[in-house]
Image (cartoon, rainbow, N blue to C red; front, top):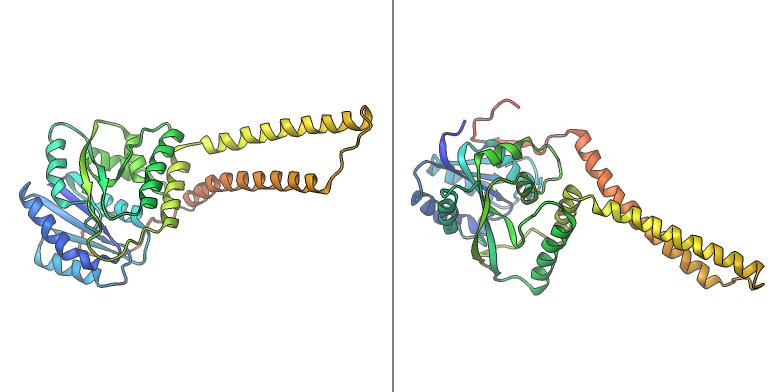
Length: 314
């Protein structure tokens, strides 16, 4: 049952230096849109004083809610927890590092009111990020679009506004390895974007390392494309075909040309090449099997240590 106009979901991991400014800018923006709103902070196992700051906000403002995880479960899981417990006609997902300006929510909401189900914030520029970070992000989105049948918007993160019917579908998706921007694109419906300049981080350091970005990329590819598996199978056929030709040539050379092919170097190179291809293939297949294994376990996505929300029975 939806009883508010707008929910805002904010995953938090060690962002205490940004929370005061975020709270002030966000509440000022939401007040200019509607009085019927809620803000849900999801504290994803922070080790600084983020939890205490969020608790202060909740004591000052009855529209502030929080979920404290028992440990760090990850950004996508934190957002999923917020989506499960929001109760509004539409929901905004925004990070707590202030790189995504809270003031843009007014434009997202105004565009949503024109009849769109999803309004995502598309980056027209990225301040304060290294050339390598910009390059890897740009390549990731374009490679992902080439590999998947789903048209996932390029140059976008999770900062977006989605209608409650989109939230309802997301909550029915039970996969453990979440890739929300891909899942939202998969749903379809009426989607558009609003351009903005992404700001540099206000304070603290990003917890999104290259290894986490790589894992997110793999979740996106394995969750929405089977082309890596097709690549493995086709590569196997190609290598088998060329190997068969080499065998025929070796037999022909030995019995017809009377020239036996010898050479330790060529043998080792061949073995190492085939071995490398096999390991890559096994690794790709293993990623898909790992996703199946995670889903078969049916463990909860997260564990809540404390909250001021009235939780429904699971």
